[in-house]
Length: 344
Image (cartoon, rainbow, N blue to C red; front, side):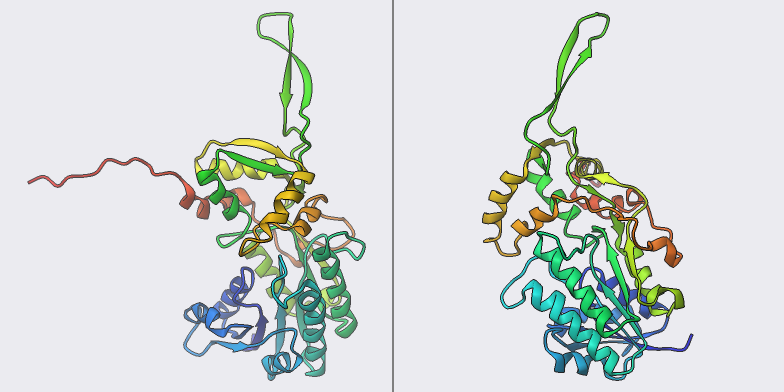
């Protein structure tokens, strides 16, 4: 395939850096467009000298978008927010920004556009995040009908903000919260050993909380590359990107604890209590949890069955059990190895 110039908006982000790496490894030239070009300088060693360049571009400013895609052969938009900050609202980035990229790409005569959305995007959602993601999809397809929309579930990988956050919490906290579990435990009677008597047992997290179908970040990047290759039957479609297995919130936390070698109490964290906590966490820099995210956690994040999946792009997703050990091992407690003393 001839060398192409690909503009990747948000290429310095969690998913974007993996897309940039794959594009560079196959010989494409990459233009990384982001608000702070210096923050993307770490990407340059991933390619040959001059193969990866960075430019300043805010997707909410049309003039900067047009400048970033000038001369490009294809465009990827990975820009998204988990929580609004400053002037960067969900509406401004997810809707207006996506619309700007799509319109500028169409006007420039570029044939390929891949837009990264999110599983659960819904115009009727109570979550502003999910609602604006859906509005952004509509804006993209209206301006660029042949665009390919990717809707990943929760994305896991070395730089993710999900497993890493809970693994960091487990370093100092004796408990791990399961958001969405009811506070009242499940009660049942079980027979004792060597006796006819039955005894009550209680399980506070039997429900397990919200269900997810997490996907490895490398698989999402591979899906974006497939979209850029111009598959004729993929144009104008929405693809739901998930792993092959469904996990409850509790099961994911159990996997995290297993791979970090820590024993912690798993406790229920009801939605009303999570709302209260999120109110105060929104005041912390970085906003580790917001009320809008709590609204998202009230709905399962799994395949809808209404759209094609990652397998329709010819990709078999990795199992997360094989991925987690590669980066969660850094959260393990000290091994207690004895100090070696050199003999005289």
